[in-house]
Length: 230
Image: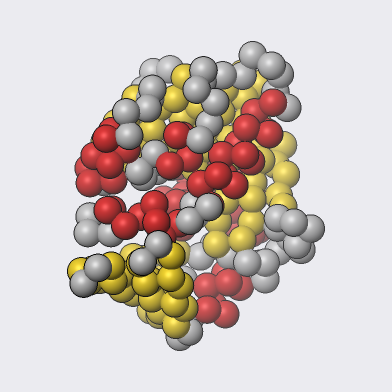
């Protein structure tokens, strides 16, 4: 996944990295001024870490070597590791653990508890776990629709197909300067009530959920944002 997509990833995401970095920084401050270390699960090309304060200790983990190769080219002061976020064990803790860009949706629902356990195991006392997800409502509503965007000479077309068992395949076609790349990326949708139960089982007893910009919280929201503490 993302092997062919990697060179185009930052262009396709546009300003989302800036928004996610701002969200992470705001909530890290709630834990006190000393919060200066972050672990990003599914960091991709490092676009979010790159936008966090330079004096933070940053570690990014991703399963895609192609995405991490681009992250390392950026020469930021961060450590990048190729690993599966479900089974990660670094034997160290962080003030912030983040899993953004609906990274969690790329895994079947049965694997989500493993990611939440990873976050809990790497979170320092008083730290915060931040993640977002595409909802059941969004993926159901968008299934069958084609969405096309253009940015910096790159045209991106996406069509989502409902393949059953709460799995949705995103067929992505990218065209830039005569080069065409096509890929299929799977996402899985989980009901909010199930996600809350998984988080509680993982030890996160204080969970705040937002739809973003005063949007409603529920399975019909487009995207949900989670701020989790033990």
